[in-house]
Length: 318
Image 1 (cartoon, rainbow, N blue to C red):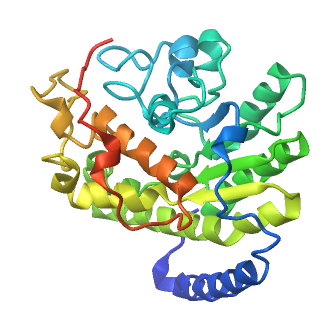
Image 2 (image 1 turned 60 degrees about the vertical axis):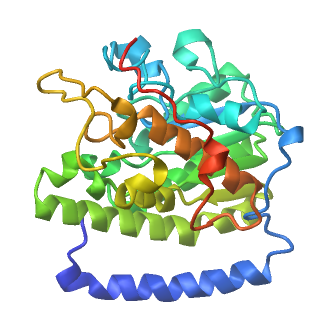
């Protein structure tokens, strides 16, 4: 369901008002709610990942033989993705490899909607005897595919809430939730026309607002450390000002899926196939997630490029 702003503009006003109320409640309960308090990385052992193609590093390839070359070894990009980069950036954690590939701790599968989150968590719990270790960091990034699947924003957030409860009930103590990047800025969605892009933008806005409203207080309700990562903020910065992040373009695709043509210098593009980011963009996402974990101010507007090191080359190979 997509809200029609011409008849439901009051929804936005209402949500903004509620957001202010929730913000006040969060401040009052700050001593008890561990929202935004960075977990102590030294006390955390493993990354456990749930999500879709933005996080999948081999599961869909094992199960369905997608994506094929020139996608990189089962990843929906031209190289490593943020899940691969995060342990390198943090200099902590073992690699979170694909579960279906080698019994790793990444359960994300390309094409998943938020309705599949419970299934991914069930699979994880089955693999560990039903007990989620309290010293792991669990990361949920899902919902991007809900727009094309026709899933309403409130249902997307409800599914995420259920996933958090599912993990908490099994013993998880440290959970990170990433919001949804503005898919209306991707070349593929823009190509579908202004109406579709506008609906996508509306979906992202409502979903992210509901995430901001509903998710943080679950940390208090479940007695866990629960933090949000505003990944959309860095995504929109990269797309709107690519040159500030060592890219030259965010309006096209490095790989034309229709013709099979790959541009000579993939490293300068934000988007790999018109929807999924290139490996260099994933590297920036990993840096931002790491900075959010450590920062006392989780939603910083800008971050120094120095933490990313030299740009990673675009491979376009398998």
